[in-house]
Every structure is written in structure tokens, then in C-alpha cells.
Image (cartoon, rainbow, N blue to C red; front, side, top):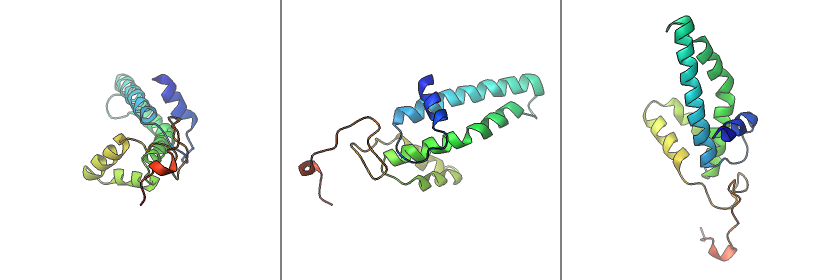
Length: 129
């Protein structure tokens, strides 16, 4: 699980390509746990009015979070700009979460090769559009 966290942090500015579902969700779990631990430390050290550590951690990890979300959307065949729906309360959050949880496209797509290492389907198995 921590390997995925390190992978996302290591690719903090990589908005191109694709990310596996596992990469994003394992990162999200570790990120949430780290945020909760830092908030508990903030409350202990500074009280509830000054969550300095949590705020600093959130700002530092914002670029890798955004990059991972964009790459995950790419894996499902969607453009990264759809991450902006997160700015729309409730309906946007639900829409983005549904897209992030969707199964990725098998084989390569316009954003890059399959991050699971899938094999490209034979041309005769690809449905005509």
C-alpha cells in the first residue's frame, strides 16, 4: 500500500499517461490516514483553530493528488479536465468519484499504454464505431 503512495508522490508533476485504479485508491487511503494523524497532532499541539501541519501537508500533496486523479481519468478514457467537476459541490463530487472508480480501458488508449500491462486487442475484436 505504501509503495503506491510513494509512486504517486514520485510522479507529482506527471499529468500525462494513465494510472491504475489501485494506484489512486491505495494512495487515497494512506493520504487520508496521514491527514487524520496530522490533524490529531495539530489539535494536540495547537488546538482546533490552527491546523498548521494539516494545511501544510495538504498544500504539499495537492499537485500529486491532482496528477493522480488526471492520470486515473485518462485510464478510463476521459480527459483530465473533468477533475474540475470536483469544484461543483455534491453532484460534482459524486460524478468524479464514479469516474475514478470506473474500470480502466483495456489496452492502450489516446493517453498511453495500459498501466496493467494489458495486451492490445486484435483489430478484428475491436468494435467499429
